[in-house]
Structures are given as C-alpha cells and as structure tokens.
Length: 135
Image 1: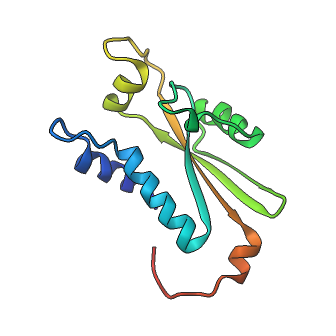
Image 2: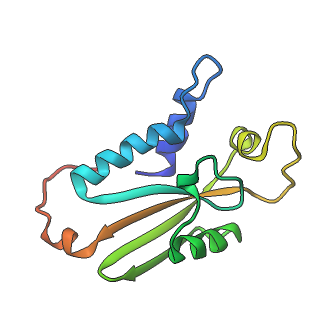
C-alpha cells in the first residue's frame, strides 16, 4: 500500500458529484489488511484539525509521531513489546487543507500533513505462511 493508492482514491472518489471521502474508503482497505495479514493501519492528525475523534493521536508513539511528522520528517518507527510501528507522513493537498483547515480560512504557507500509522506483531510475521500473493 502506498501514498499512490490514497492519491488514486482521491482522483476516483473525491469529486463534486460524489460525496465519498477517500480516507474513509481507505479504512475499508485497512480492515482487509487486518483480516488478511494481521496488519493494522489508521490515520492520525498531524498539524491540521482531525476530522474524526478516531484520528486524534492517542498513544505516546502517535503523539511523538505527530510532533516529528509536523517537522517535515518522512516517517518514525519503533519496536516495542513485540510490535513494529511506523507512522508515515501524508502531505495534504489543497482540497484536503480546505476541508481540514476550514473553507475560506488562510492555512498559512507551512506544509500540512496527516499521518498513516501501521502496526504489526513481529511474532505474527514470523509465524505467517507465505501465500505467494503480491502486494
């Protein structure tokens, strides 16, 4: 999964005639990832308003990730208690900033980001059989 997938979803679903928000569509993909590969993924707000309380950084890792990603870093990682976590920056485009920042409000010139947090148990990765499927 990549940023290209998110951008593709935006081109496909975020149009005036349709009211599907691409980040919500991606949450369906996250559900499939969890069921198929035991990999968890979710959004966090970084330096813009969270559009859902579910996107507020909650854990210490997520709060640190939001601070680090807001500085322009690409990603932050940790391994703790047998779980690998990675938070990657997702740069928000003009349409994203309009909604997250409030229509007709000046968002300033600093780049705006959201974060994508991916977590997986390392023991699950070692025990999972190879399926031969490609991402």
